[in-house]
Length: 429
Image 1: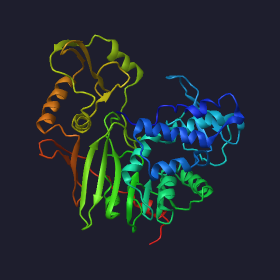
Image 2 (image 1 turned 60 degrees about the vertical axis):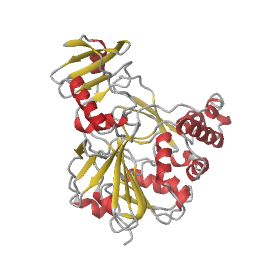
Image 3 (image 1 turned 120 degrees about the vertical axis):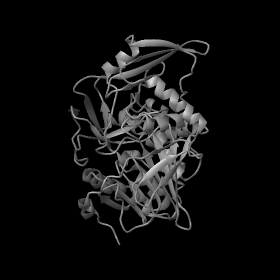
Image 4 (image 1 turned 45 degrees about the horizontal axis):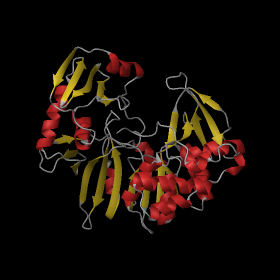
């Protein structure tokens, strides 16, 4: 239950067989192995998305990708840029492209075209193609069909745009990104696949003014649904927006639809994984030293409790916690429940010690155990929802609420759109 994009891709079976022989690389076999894995582990169904993934060569969209060479915690971190043009790189690169994990494509905001194979150190990865299991499930959720007009917000490496073009055609396809280096590369690489969608450098929150779309997909997490995107939905249209707060631990997915008579209906679903946060969104994390303290320090006090901690399966509760108990981050690498509040230094550790007994250890000014249990009681009284109605008001205000209305919270106030971004758009009217 965390945002994606930080774990390395694992090599698929067809790739491992080729690791020792650079001439034995078989992209078609690697694609087939990836799709078979998506079917077995992520429930990918036979249909348009499956067919598109089998047909699209990722090595054309991502002819270069980074692999991390530094150890966890090593400073500065180091990455090697692998290239399809180098035969010796192809087995490892194929493992990155079709292993199912995130594919790291940009370091420190660099141009993607004309890069030399080399080692980069310091700074950070600034663009990646998201874990394929998540991408495939969301593309299936979109229910893409031939002839639909599609807006892809967050071009990145162009994978989502390519799938949409393959299924719907490129005539009504618009993909946009704030990073011109990404859009420049996508224009060339999508054309290499035979696709020529409208490619725009501009604001994701603003979308494509003056146009309507049957499907809109945002490939990074926001704190709310941009009203401009909802306004650009055609009757019968659907918009998907990953929603998160400062903590990456408990994301949601906003599903917004415009009915045939023009009304907006929306819900916020608890999900296990989501895309990374968009540009400029504040993030809070547990650093290695804080994780160690939670795992090993004695804390201020320990109590024996008969109250069970919230279960991992209680995703609707954890989604509510992200919004109503802000500032908390979970350590999913810990053996048992471990949560910290980086801003104030408070933390919680819960360990089972027998049948229906738990040791609850806390430290710091914030009683995380109490607020969690109080919220759990409210969530259960509201019917233990995993989905919440999302009310989008004409003035832009947004509020999530359980069906009975007993558990509710506002989404953050909308930020004003930078008027200058409109001048970056080059769209037909």
